[in-house]
Image (tube, rainbow, N blue to C red):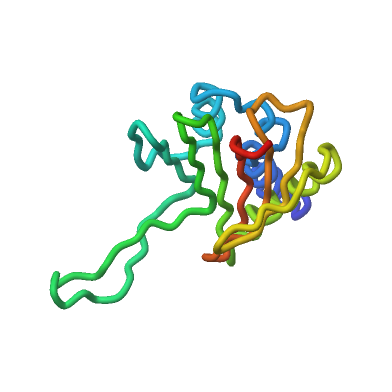
Amino acid sequence: MRPVLFLIIFIPCIVFSQNNEITFSEIKRINSKQVFLKLVISKNFTKISSDINEIEYAYNVHEKLGSYNRWLGDFEKSKVAEVWAYYYPNSGEFRFVFSPSRFDDMNQNYEKIKSNIMSQCIYHSIYEGEYTDAVLYTCSSSSYPGKICFYKDTNGGFVIESITNIK
């Protein structure tokens, strides 16, 4: 009886996490706003904001109470999520930020994507920025313009990003 109960509880958890996991093959297909939206909407991301410069979605988003602001007479609120997804219509670039800490499944998702980039793509160069450095790769089998890179951002998030302005 216990093994059956275990399977009834455990199998739906595996199926749920696999359905919402972003894969590198899905990322490689992002070549337009429509493809980006199809991916994040099908993975149950929530729309956060949208304007002509940036489209923002988040997975498993919720508000977190911060410190008390005595001037406003209320607690400051911020949004936290397991994964943030951005699309920039003007350049066709995208970014996925996998939040650090308690979201181990999402960090494993980032590591899988990073590993696939390293094994399926060709190393291009190191991008040295003011606040972070990134490893850039060229992926001939991808549909997105430019290069793909990965890095850890200044907030501790793990980032997979496309960059179009590097030759």
